[in-house]
Length: 167
Image (cartoon, rainbow, N blue to C red; front, side, top):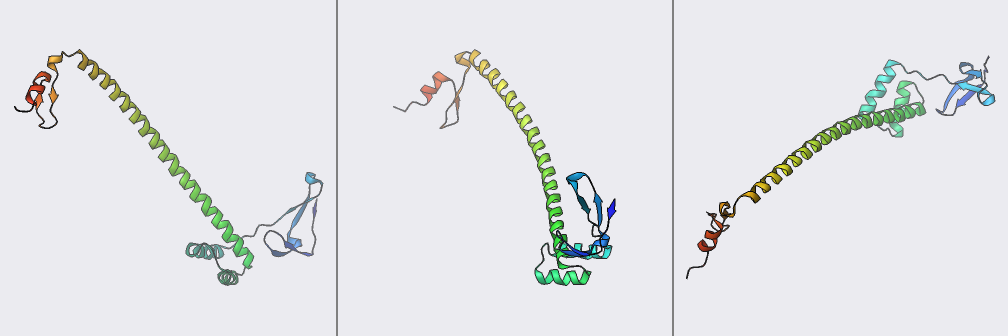
């Protein structure tokens, strides 16, 4: 059942005065009373275009800009203010989604690189163990020593003789 009243009312969320004849009321069992369905304000394409162009220049408006734009669009200043608030919220949400996608991709790349580095580290550890086992198996005579002062390769016994101070 729909009821209509012809007395003017002030819409609390937008501060817009409307004729109640344009507002529909439905009787619902929900909450045991009348549930009000508000008509959504539809902006023309020209109004939307001008609002979007203004938003690109200034994401927030001062009072003078807001009043001038409202007058130019034949809207109330509060309607312009709410449109800008909603547009900033949509813009922020979109940027958050873009950032989230970027971070997901970055995280995936880091996981792949981490896996690659772990695999490389494992390979290096296994080759190091193999090399150290090979080193242990070599006889002492086969090992060479590099003298840090002259970069000559010598055998261990010869290294002591080669670098002893002259007498």
